[in-house]
Length: 310
Length: 310
Image 1 (cartoon, rainbow over the protein chains, first blue to last red):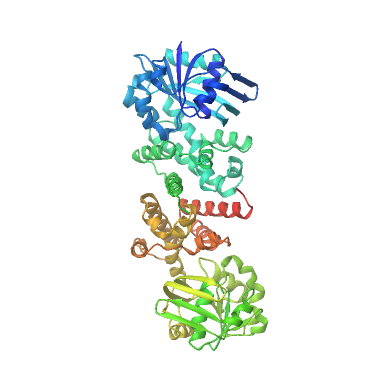
Image 2 (image 1 turned 120 degrees about the vertical axis):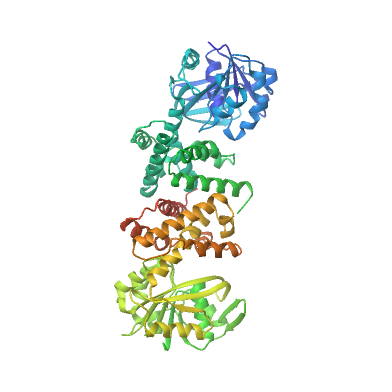
């Protein structure tokens, strides 16, 4: 059982899961920067269906040196800030530290493995609709499930121990023997919805599936992702799009995280969600013209905005 | 030689070519609506490299009944306003009237042929960079060439007579025996550049060809259009994209007309430039996934804007 836990990255996801663990009595230590003083003063408040609590005393620090070695390091930074991890992570490590990335898309485990050793790395896919309302308040709108897996290996004893830690804190959590496959399965949803929500002018999932042309385009994108996963030897069934469409049709309109980032003027995880899957798929011989287009448009839109274009 | 000419549609294109003809002494009659009083008072001023003139007395009217039958009717309305032509055109017709559409994209000759008889219809492709600065001023930035052709027939004597009329007015003009082929050849440029200029966030041609990903996407779209034209039995060489890219690389950044329309809050010619080529290409067995995407995005962006979405 990991006894000492660090949270690196306190956006909505890091704040929510960290607060859940802390509320359940885990020994959680948050790295904070601009938010430090306020969280020290007010703690963290969590709202959501069936949960409504405040953790009044939060262990928070403005450097990982102050936190020191931990058994479990949860990475919840945006993938666009990965370079910061090179300096942030080492003070948190001992020989057996588990580094769990909850980040989106592909390439994050590899990034961490290369710098800190593959044997340390776990990945988790978060299925959650969550938003930070202020420096100290976070609200979960839906879901919350984490799917945990080892990087490049089947699940091990420690994987289940981490899952048990989350489950003990009231977080739905399951374990997979094939993390890479699950990452691709999640991309079937993220590649169309996170992308189209921006390039079609700032619309939610209901507007996408409700528009005849965009719905078809979503299906076409999903099929590209499924075919690419298969070319990369991650076997997804040809109708793996079906569960995603069914779920999306049944839920109320949801604003994908990348659209929230876009609207907030934050960096977009373009490489993790589109660039890396595209490079891997194309290198394996997949044809991904629609994904290429979404990628190209997002990059240009992002570039235009960051350079103050009209 | 057509002796009496009507201009229907006095955006930049209709105003420029009409003023050129009038300045050269042709008997030109403009249909005007909101601009009537000002053009009556001030005439039309034309600027451009090598030309700078004013036509002080313009024959203009606010109904086509007042104009009456003409030998040549030049249609320069946006294709999105075609339904207005059903009532506007008949008063201008006699038995041998030539109806020349200078509109963009595919489907305009067919629309006119169905209502007024195929034997009346000519089409013209305008290669021109032109902008209206006010109700009475128009400026040509580049080019000016018109390629004229008969609808569904090779060029005839009258086609050359119309060309002669333009050439006599100082407008570069050539005649084609295969109008449909030339329409597809022009689409090789319009489908990528007019589309990407909007969906990539309001950028000009130089920004498109200067971006590695968008440049590749432009080439991919061009190849889709060429393949679709060939499927539709309009034989374009496989490297027909080359002349377009060469020309675009050599010119200074240009804002496609659809982007100008978008920025001015005007309707976009989505069906003529993307919808109709797509329907014809796909019906003939072409695969056009990238064109489908540009089409879907433009439709949604346009819809969002017209419905005041965020």
